[in-house]
Image (cartoon, rainbow, N blue to C red; front, top):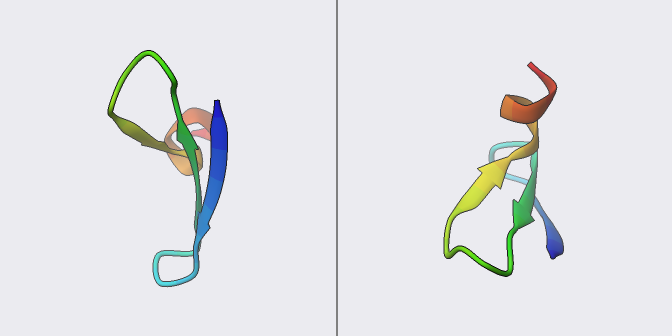
Length: 30
């Protein structure tokens, strides 16, 4: 699992190793 931060959208993203999808941290915290 890898974390990355996107300055443009001001969001922290989680990259899951078993899926190619990227999940915005804001959705998980909502």
